[in-house]
Figure 1: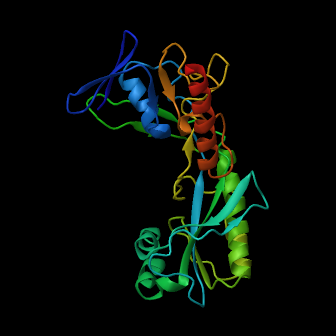
Figure 2: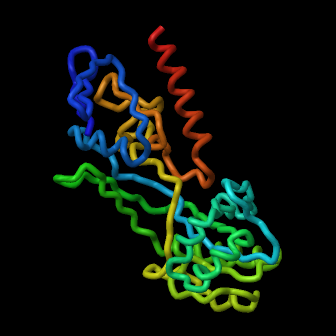
Length: 274
């Protein structure tokens, strides 16, 4: 745990081993979860951690007749942006361990991973998040509590995207598809797509995300805790330069946007410092 204390001329930081450091300007870059968590743990709570945004995502594992995978392959850059920004398709990391995790509640997929993993790849569809999550502290715990309720609209759009993605994979030669839905039978023919629910089942769909942002939104509106250049309102010398700043779901990987904002805000800071 890190302690933040306002002192004359800046901030005092108390590290987890008790070391105390003083600085006139402190830049927080702990990500969309741990930046608000750190602030809340130190009594800075107004409009902090109430607007977490993300891209709800569902995955499907595809089995092909030919090899499409190899050791150390990383994340292939396969993406479909035809339906962006509402939804995007892409390929995920698909090493044997990841494939095995995808098959934890898909017995046939899990059975085939050992022998057929080179012919398998994991794909995803993500949609724009329309809900807001929350980040809270838990008494006695050093970890944050993160919550996000997926909306009916998001479940419907994920179902549409999943059906489109499955059609694409089958028409490009996939022999079998294993959506991340507990109890879902493998899909081997286009006609079977009609059996998919028009709304992703809330209780059995195994959703995930890797894009988190917007928990300390920047802007000049009163509800924004951070101004347009990353300065925490009401706390001189405290700045936020990470994914927390984003105002809304961008519909794409937010890394480029985050880097651009941090670079812009840093230039502004340097200009102000002379």
